[in-house]
Length: 466
Image 1 (cartoon, one colour):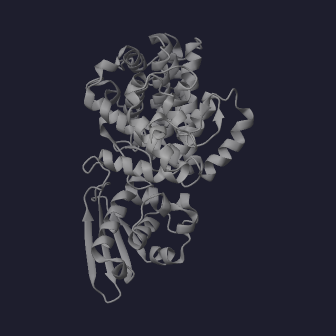
Image 2 (tube, rainbow, N blue to C red; image 1 turned 90 degrees about the vertical axis):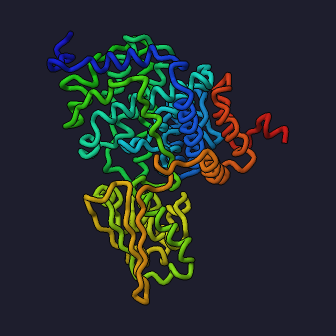
Image 3 (cartoon, rainbow, N blue to C red; image 1 turned 45 degrees about the horizontal axis):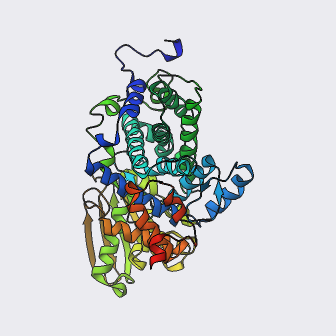
């Protein structure tokens, strides 16, 4: 073992053990309920990727990337453009996260599907991958990124790293390495190559760069696996070495979170799907405010004198922007989210546009909203107090918001979320066919059918029959 690979006595060979597990696990080793949750994750991701495809962030990324793309093999979901697989992975990672509407692993706030699914589906248009194998690789990749995230969270996140980008690159490398058949040695190298590309800063929240993180994680993770396939070597202790990922990027290194119960305890089973298009910590506030609007009626909420929110300190740390100027900034303003939910009953992407953020009525109520941090309040809870012009008050406590693991979205609600955002981009007919194709992923001999079905104006056997 070379000096740079040495680890402290008693530290397990984390990278080696994890890589060996990725290589050897089979699709049949994954229980049906875990595969079903993986499918829900995939369907939700496709809807988010198409839903974000027309955002100006994507237009600008495409303009920058297209001149440097190689052979156009892979679809940018929801658009007519194709790029090489590496750049398509980047763009689909951006589209799927730009609305902040994608899945969330609540233990770490990782958005698991973006880095992994973006890499896999882009590759599927270049190399034949069955739907069954793609789903297996997706679940394995999510497991890798979330376990690595668990091992360093929250210290890593508190330092300012955007954990979707930093852990996501490992998930993409694992998933792509799985489907292209890396051996155990190559998979260890792939993790080393992923580790050295791990990045993403929370400073970028509220800007276009936030969605760049899962995109770059998808692209870098795929390239890590492809380099390893070509026997491009790397450290074999990249996760646990003294100068490796966990020690350099976190004050916490809990390797049991990575290694314990591999293949029996599934982090993908803990995934959740957003009903609202913003940071997950605002969801209790939006849920509660929409409930209050429904209970009180539109006329009553327009007589609100003040709004008082009591939430965990993390809520204000992440979403404390009091005067957002753009839709992207609005996603990180609990004040804007509360005002939009009360006045418009909206937490969808339409609540976080530039126009909504600068609406005078929204601004007026936002300015009358106060948020207080209480460390005794759970991260997933909120207390809301409304005071009206006549001095009367109404309060509501939300213990767990809709979309959480305690109040999960049903398949029908995922379908509705998919349909509403996708139809705005590609129309009703394409959306319907794409949704059906996505749910049938495991039956597809060619997983790339999903990408092809997302193109505006595309047809399928289902659509044609109707």
